[in-house]
Structure formats: structure tokens, C-alpha cells
Length: 323
Image 1 (cartoon, rainbow, N blue to C red):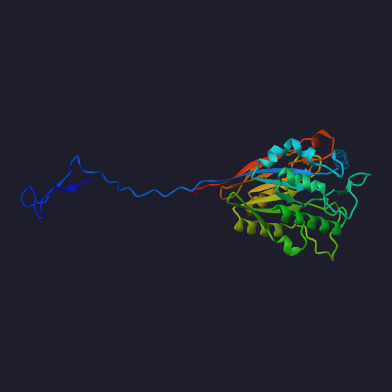
Image 2: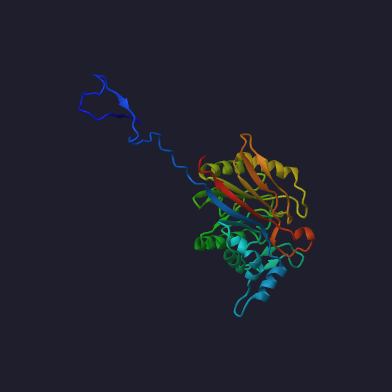
């Protein structure tokens, strides 16, 4: 830095020429521009589970565990993993069975693969710490469209009471196009849910009930792209594949690639009742999405060894503070 020597205005110690001098007593002045503050990363720790499949022996055990005056207590069945679920910022579950209180409770007993669960199941998994419930699966119409609508309304009431996000089965077309977005730790996350089939059942022509199927790729593309516009991250729950195998079919790989290209950041696969592989899928621009092809079962009463291994998807969604 520089300073002018002390003197009268217009005077100089060397003739009439002003002189610039630097002295030890001169105070240094920083002239570097201030640095822009760097925003911190935003991080969401996510846990996701596969099929919550309430077989006959599952609800019979819950019946035995119930105390006086209670019908069912499912909470002890989930207790061993509660610390994992409640430790997440966001927990997602595939609710495989409907809850219709006007129909009999069933759990694939009596030779018929039909499921309808008691409402205490919902109480248990909500208490466990799950925030998001996906319902697009092959057992949606096990007791008909009216029972499915009853189950949707049941879960919508739970969602309102406990700040939950519920999707995959919708009361009508407008509801299905209402993309669910949940903000967690400052990160907006959009959720979508699709099913491969509904066990040969079909929605009656006069019912407004709506489930988006995997073959409706035009709808899926539109919804994922829209979700990508309104949220920071997009999570897709995909019910697909061949049951009781760990082989990932080519059609699932193709659909997963399309979903990622359209904007899906994470795909959570279910339905096969087996734990399958997972991988990154790269887009043309070099960015990536991640797919769990099947997380297998969460709770069930299937006893083959390949049905007894399930996955808890455990990952972080990170929004980079600089970029």
C-alpha cells in the first residue's frame, strides 16, 4: 500500500515533485474482493422396504400378541428393525395388502391368494416410522373396486392425521395426476408408483378408480417429466417382475432405463418376493439414476429360502450446495 509523506498541501520534500513513500508504519489494506458464501449441502437419509405382505399366519400371530381388549398387535413383529426405520429422515414402504373393514380379513388362506388386512397393520407401520406408502401392486383388487376405494379413503385419513404421503391407487384420474411431493430437510422429493398387473382383475368401466400400469409408458413419461420439473428429486416405486426368481428380466431393464432417462433418480422395485440386484443407470448427459430391481419382502409368511431374504434400501439424497 502507499501513503503520501506528511507536509503542507502542495509541498514536497524533494523540490516540487510529489513523492510516494512506503513506511513501516503504514497500515496494510486488503483489496481482494470478498468471497461468495458457499451454500451447504442438503441431505436426506432414506430407508425403503419391500412388500408388507400380511399372510394369514402373520395376522394370527398379531392376534396372539394382542393384549386384553385388543384385536391385533403387529408392533412386536416389526420391533427388530424399528431403530433403522425411525432413524431415517424419510421412510418408504410398499403396502402390499388393502385394508377394507367391510370385508373379511384374509391372508392367502383357504387356497385363494386374496389379501385384506386389519387396520392395526397401519397403526404398526406408522408407529414404526414410515412416512410414504405406495400401493400400486397386484393385490389391489382382491376384494373388488369398492374395497380398494375404501382402502384408499382409509389411508387418506391416516395421511391427514399423521402427515403421511400415500400414492399408487387413486380415487379418480385427477387424483392420479396430482403428483405427490414431500419436502424433507429443504429437499423437495416427488413420488410416483406403478404396477405391472392386478392378478387378472380389472377396474369396472363405471368406476372412477385409477391405477397407472407399467405398459402406459406415455403416462409414466409425462408424470416423471412433470415431477422432475416441480421437485429436486424423483422416486419411482415399480411393482414388476417374475415372482420367486432373482433374475432381472430384460423388459424391466428397458423400462428402468426409460424411467431414468425421463428423470427418475431412484427406482424402488417390488413384487418378486426375492431380493434382487441393483445398479446405476447413466443418462446421455452423464448423470445417473439408481435402481433397486426388487427389495423382496418386508414381512411375510413365505418359507422358501429365497423369500426370506429382503432388502432395506438405505441411501442419501444430496443436493450439492455449490452446484
